[in-house]
Image (cartoon, rainbow, N blue to C red; front, side, top):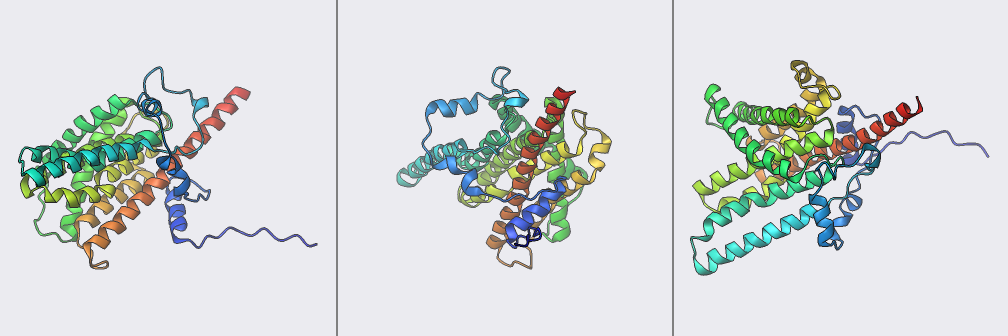
Length: 336
């Protein structure tokens, strides 16, 4: 029987093809398939309090694993969903207090929990995805709070230096996207340097922490001005905005900088950095700009959320691939 010639894999699935294209930006030549059912399989299983405690104690000198003990498989996060349910339950309780008893005392709590609910849950997701487990929840909370405030301060400084038109045409949206993403990038770069973060998954986590902080404080401000109804839109919109954009920026810095080297001027001149940071800026720009191609802004937002997650999933895959490369390098050293 005649042997069949090797057939080159060609996937017609648009999602997988797009993932492959983005994955190539990270320097990958392999093809990976997304398996959300496997990635989130643990979300729907029962977990004990001990298991949740074990997730949150990661990152200390006693709980950071050796490189050889780090799994080469993608993490299966689940605790983020429990955190979301707790925050959602608190929000619904406060909403009931406000609607049933007309208690204005519930408003500050509604604004705080409503602003925190999605960004902080996403932050826990990135904390779980950090397979290196080398950044503690205390450090993440510090970055979330201090980094969030500093990024807002930096944003206002840049707005003071760069005038932006009030009409929301493409050039105005681009100016806003560039200013806000650059402001967050500066703070992300500082914390990456401060923590000496060298891994893609670290960059994603640090960026997500600052983006989540920015999102929480910004949404709280809008809710204080325009009322608590603002929270309902901005909560689901947070699924694909500042937390993800800053996570992409954080990963772009780590991808561009040399291994265990400090961030230097040349780091921000590398194509990998520009590709991913430019993507974050473009996503932010398109979010603020009324895209004539799509028409309805809800469709536009869901499309941009989809694209943001596409990029994040490709970066997570690159982070897992980095672990495999480190294991291979360590084995070569052992054989020498």
